[in-house]
Amino acid sequence: MQKDSKIYIAGHGGLVGSAILEELKQQGYKNLIFKTHSELDLTNQKSVADFFEKEKPEYVILAAAKAGGILANSTYRADFIYQNLMIECNVIHNAYLHKVKKLLFIASTTVYPKNAALPTSEKQMLSGDLEYTNKPYAIAKISGLMLCESYNLQYNTNFIAITPTNLYGNNDKFDLEKSHVLPGILRKMHLAKLLNEGKYEHLLNDLKLDSIEEAEIYLKQFGIDKNNVEIWGSGKPTREFLHSQDLANACLFIMNNIDFKDLKGDNAEIINTHLNIGPHKNITIKELAELIKKIVGFKGKLIFNSDRPDGAMQKFTDCSKIHSLGWKHKIELEEGIKMLYEWYLKQSNARC
Image 1 (cartoon, rainbow, N blue to C red):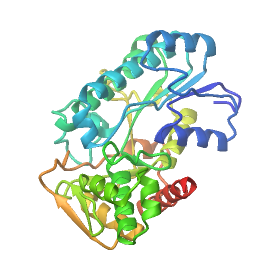
Image 2: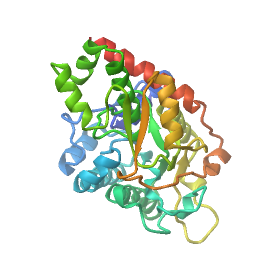
Image 3: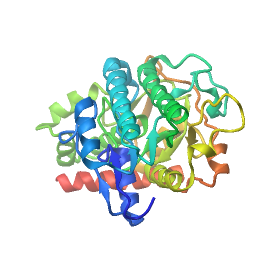
Image 4: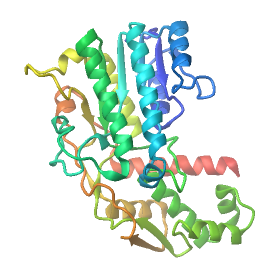
């Protein structure tokens, strides 16, 4: 990509898209296009078609998605599959119709079977049954991977798809119901710490509530009080975590250095041409919770509720493919969590 190339970032306001937008700006790219959801509904076929006809982007980074943690995935199953399928179909098809030079689609390692061999390589996609709790989301993301690969094979497009591990970073979702595991645990412990230390003004400001009694009742439903924080599941599942800044760096590396022809391999049957992106390091949820507890400074106890679902028990991704092409992560987990907590505190203090 040239510094004046016209680049469209779909989903620029989210965790991934905002990091990519910032990385593009820092690297000197100036001709950037982005629209809010109210300006452009990516699930609307005509709106997306009209947008591509008018703007004619040269490059597209598809970071827009409906995403969430175990509770959100289990509760909003129809929303997760429908909205993600519509976004992917509309953007990828119009990128083909309008001759976009390169598209990067960001999926997730949820595309892999729940009992995939570890470390999980790209070739294991569609080799077994998916984890039930996020199956609708995973099927939508698999469809996006297949769209990119199929358009490349039929129409000679240059659409690259990646499957990052669990992500965290600035502009993450901290909603106690809908967030991913890391920001969800971090906010739970921060709120418990405020309650424990009697910092009620900050607590009420964070929750946007009017009384401590109301706050305590609200927090109780999420297993939070001044002395305890409940964590869903046994704490035994393993996960990998990649900072959004590292992912953004990987995305620009791919856009500038990797094409579909580099991923096809020598086999007659071209399949699973996507790229895993991650740190190639995993941690149990219990270890993660203890690390966050230390960073936040919460003095209470962690209670692991085994009556709640664990999700997939083990995740450990083989990232040798992207490593062999020249990219590796830079931000280690403890440093990244400290960065995230500092960012969260700044946002909270700004609202006071």
